[in-house]
Image (cartoon, rainbow, N blue to C red):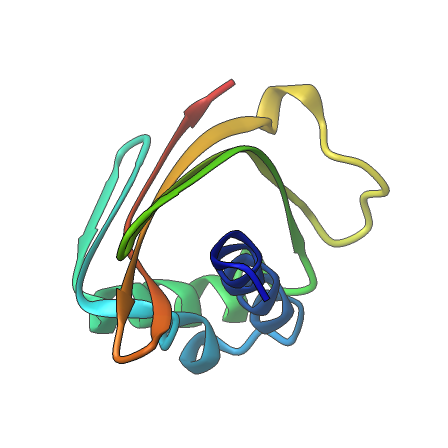
Length: 125
């Protein structure tokens, strides 16, 4: 698989973990010192990502699914940047409401032969 394919595979595995409400599998796709920035939210470190997602999966995001459509994927050596259109489809919804659509930026790093998320940020589209 190409580097771009390997990078896209990280997102696929992430959303499989989301569909399973598996905060451990989700967080394992982040480097130890990852950062996550979303409107009103900042998390530093894999443990913080795991804690946040575990609470979300047990509460407001239970039964939800995430969508993420890469618009631009750039791989340069051991770093990759993905810009995507993303959002969360809540339990009982069939489609992503326009007001919850986001533009997301992912920064991935190749470590020990695999790709992991180093930084993630999103903002309203």
